[in-house]
Length: 118
Image 1 (cartoon, rainbow, N blue to C red):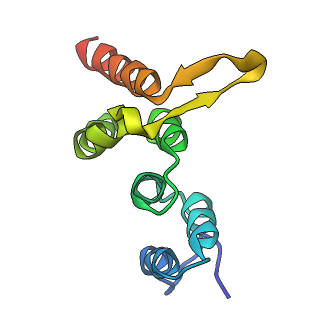
Image 2 (cartoon, one colour):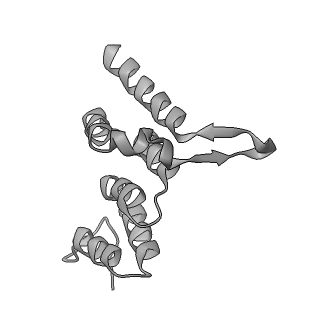
């Protein structure tokens, strides 16, 4: 049984998430655990490094969930190549408009830069 995040727990969530990532068919469980226990840095790595990358989700987490600017910058330094890669593809939104993941990553970088300047 997994206790709530507010309680004292002997359960190591980072290890559990990593074990799920290594086992075929358990990546959804790894994502759910990372989301539930707000392991945003691990979740970004799952979305970028694992079998079926989801760059848009990784960018959204860096932008919306991670509040520490230093961690945002660290993740952009670590995964910048993947975030800006044309191989990452694009997503389609309502009306068939195409938004590139490169643009999402650049928008995030601009937000962080503005924050650091102000």
